[in-house]
Structure formats: C-alpha cells, structure tokens
Image: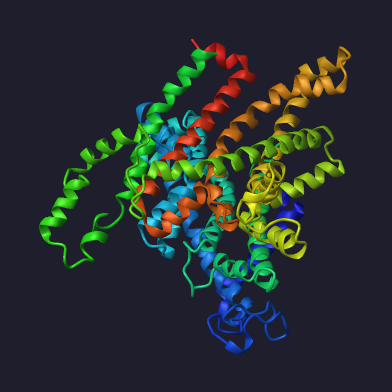
Length: 273
Length: 326
C-alpha cells in the first residue's frame, strides 16, 4: 500500500476515478438539469453560468448529458471487462492446468481471435444484432478476453508445480477445487492489473462505436454520442467537442495510470535506474 | 530462409480456417434469412417463390454444407454479390482497398520512422527531458480517443487555419491539375488521416522500444562492446538494437489488426472512400455478403502482417531460423 501511495500519479488517478464514479452514482444530484430536456430557445449556447458546458443542438444541457453519460459509459465498460475477465479466467485456467491437447486447442483459438481486427468483428456483430447497450457490453467483453487468458495460463503453468498444490491434491481435493481455491486466487494479481487497463480500453471502444452511431443510441447520452453532435457542429460549437473528449481522455488516462500503480504495488520490480 | 517462410505459411492455414469459421458463425447470429428482405416484406411473393429463392442461395441446405460451399468460394476470393446494389463483393472491395492499404502502409512507416528512434533515444538518455516528455506522450497516446484527436486536428488545421482540406482524398477540380499538383493534392488530403492512424500505435511502439532497449543496455555484452572501444553509436545501433528490436517486431505484427480496424474510424471521419468506410456503409445497410467479405479480407491482411513480422523476426534473429527451419 505504501508503494501505491508514493506513486502520486496513481493517487491522483484514483481520485479522478472516484469523482467520475460519484458522478455516475449520484447523477440526479450532481446534474441539476434534466439531460433530455429540450430547450429550443437555447440551441447551441456557449458555456455560461446556467449551462456550465453549454448546450447542444437541441438545447440540452451538455454538463448534465456528460454526467448521465458517465453512467452508461462506465457501466458498459465495467460489465464488458467483467465478461472478458470471466471468460479469460475460464479458458486460461483450463488451458494452464490441464495442458496437452486442451491447452493447444484453446491457445490456437486465442491466436485466431487475436487475428481479427477486433473493431471489424464488433461492428459485424452489431450489424447482425441490434446496437443495444446489452449487446455492446457482451460484444466488447467477448472480443477482449484473450490477453487475460494468456496471462492466467502463464501464471497457472508455474503455480501448478508448487508444493501447496501437490499437498492439496494429496488431501483429495478435486481439480475444480484446486483451480478455483488455490490457483486462481494466486494468479489474480496480474489479472487485476490488466482488467484496470481493460476498462480504459472498453471506454474507448464504446465511445468510438457510439461516435459512429452504432453504439449507444440517442436520446440516451453516452460520451461517444455527445461527440457525434460535436462533429456536425465543428467550428461552430467547440464546447460540444472539447468537454466530452476531455472526460474520455482523463477517465481512460486515470485507469491506465492506476493500472500502472497497481502493477508497481503488486510486483515491485527492479527500478530501472 | 525460404524453408522457414514456407513452414510459417503452412502453419497459418488452420488459423485461416478458424477465421472463416468465426466469420460464418457471426453472420449466422442474424435472426431470419437474408432473403427475408426480398420476400417477407413483399406480400406478392408466394411461398413457392420464397422456397425457390432460398434454394437459389442454398439456404435450404444444412449449415455445415452451406459453410463448405461458402468456403470453397472464399479461397478464390468469391464473396458473392452485394445485397445492396447487386455488384460483385470482390469488385467492390478491390476498388476500395488500395487507398486503405496506402494509408496503413504510410502510417506504419511513420510509426517505425518516429517510434523506434524515439524509443531508443529515451532509453539511452533515461531521465532526460526528452525521455520524460515521451513517457507523458505515451500515456496520453494510449488514452486518447483517436476520433477525438481527428476532430480537434480537423477543426484546427482545416477550419481555423485553413491549411489542409477537410475531407476526401482529392479536390473537386482534381482532373484539371498537372501531375505534380495532383500528387501534392492527394498528399495534403492524406496528412491528417495518416497522422491519426499512426498516433496510437506510435506511442505504444516507442514505449516498447524503450523498455526493450533499457533491458538490453545493462547486459554484459554491451559492456564488452564498450570496453573494446567501440563508439557509442556502434554499441547502440549495432549491438544493442539488434537484440532490443525483437520484441518490438512481435508487437508491430500484433498492431496490424488495430490499424486495419481503426481504418473504419478515420475513413468515416475524413470521408475517405476506402475499405473501412465501405465496411461502415455495409454495416449500416446490413449488407451481409460485403460484411463477410471485408471481415475475411481484414483477417487475411492481419495474417499477412503476422507472417511478415515472423519473417522479419527470423531475419533479425538467426536462432529462430536455425531451430525452426529444419
């Protein structure tokens, strides 16, 4: 923990993440205006005391939309990462523990998945199904588990040779018990680091999808689809482009720096002097 | 060397089958049949006509038969006809792919030309201002939404300053330009897209290059090289770089799918008539045969990128050739 607190960047990032989480959880108290209230008299008004971040093409308050959008963007990325960690743990631990044929089949599958331009795959699935929030979560999750699987497999390959695993087996523990109670808890550290990194990635993917109009559908606000408005008013309403973009940048940056901090805390490597 | 290349290529065949299987599966997630658009919505189409249409497209056969007949056509790049305008999918892709490849190759050159020297310099001058600013830039590069940078640069250079064209790949009066002016015109249109496509990976590559270089620089053989009196640039570029570049080559190979996938984003923003934009249009129009075609071509290009990375790797590291080439 001391290691972590010494890392100022990581602490600042954690602070920012907590702020965004508060935004998401307490959205109705933080954003005073209704994010979907249309005001035709105030279309595209610049930031002012009443509308801190200005208003969009329908006169809706941009700050409120960003605050409510954080709910959507964060929940999509959390659940997507949850899915990818679960799938990655499942395949990675099976491949690492059993080895042999199962291992090579699973790892081949991982190689194949890594060969797909992920963004193409996601778009194709969205084209086939509807671009609902649920589908987006699932698709991002199911196309990003490969890194976790490789990580878990590598960890378990070394862990399973340790004495405590042999001891547990001697005492009659089943394979499932060994994997779930002994191996995964010991391998979870690096997974945690990569999951934190993954949240940043998922936020970026979601925003790119919504920006292209194939992600979260209006009127539901998400950081990406606010930027879609920004594109059509480029050069006219800078606030529609600047603010949501900054929110995405700082949030993703915070998760990336936090991940770096966590890694230093969990595996204090040699400082490169 | 040739043997090694042949061996790697053969190893990619099962991966290619896996890719086609996944593409096929994804499209079959779709509810209903592709012919529904032509039949269900049209009350005049009789049951017999519908059945005839399904037979024509082979939809009455079991799924695995459909897969193999599709696969047979895929290997000769026959993706069927577009559901939208009835043109050959392979033709549609062929006319869109050169510009996408051009942008991707140019940005790959930019990534290599800037990312690798930047990584080496920050490793050699660790702790310097250059190193610190590169680190900051790397983190921002990892975290910034590509399309947002595109919007910002577009608004700065094309709208506020008016230096660069906003979108497309040629000006309206392109036909009347002289050859020199034509090249200049296309180059001006390509500056922003290429820069944006390179931006994200640039940060990553310089970071990996730095890490690999830092790891190598402390090893004994580098000390030996210095001890025998080689100049610093000989030590760094001849001895250290050859070993440090290996992991970077792997990462470069892995970044190909990201580049190809990213083409959807910057081609849509800059209205570039490339494969990415075609994919986006097909997704919007639910043009399944084109989607499948591009999905397969995209994966195929990625495989090609990986193969090139493998070859470059074995070129840089003779041990690989020696052990795997037999």
